[in-house]
Image (cartoon, rainbow over all chains, first blue to last red; front, side):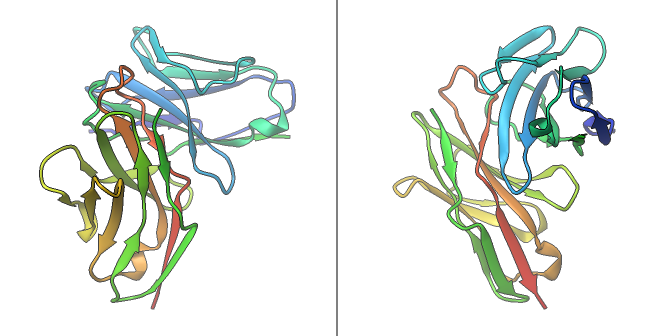
Length: 115
Length: 116
């Protein structure tokens, strides 16, 4: 029973390029959450999605960042025109329902480095 | 709004001694509370949760946590620490009255170091 799969594990982009981060939730989970972890900092919420729906994007920067969770395929976090400040670990988590009583299952993260 | 505070960046204990990692929370409704552990270069792993019922919750690897409503705290404890417990620990909260019920807010983390 595979857990949450994130790829790539490591991603290097030059300033101005686009970064695409993928997340396949755990089997049977329909809710996906993206968090960002900056060096020496905690986890900051970015976005919460269900299939074909963005439920809460209050943590997403207003520009350059977008997320989707299509009917088929993984959830995608997209960062356009990356800057050095985007360098961080991006974690995806999933849960079986939006009910608050479930803990999250996390992926191993994508470490983005902008050079 | 919901928030979590982990007042200690670092906790050091000797192997075999009891450990406590502190967490306090703030929610407008009733809280759902969680502890996660993160090892270097890995994702977070779920340890335990408080939803309702008994205030003392037992979880993975011998960890437990006590929910204290009057102090709005959910401290993580273990009676006898192991060197292998050394990791980064995160407390998280969800407001069960929040329409965005799935969103958890995490503390900044506490680094636990257990010395032999």
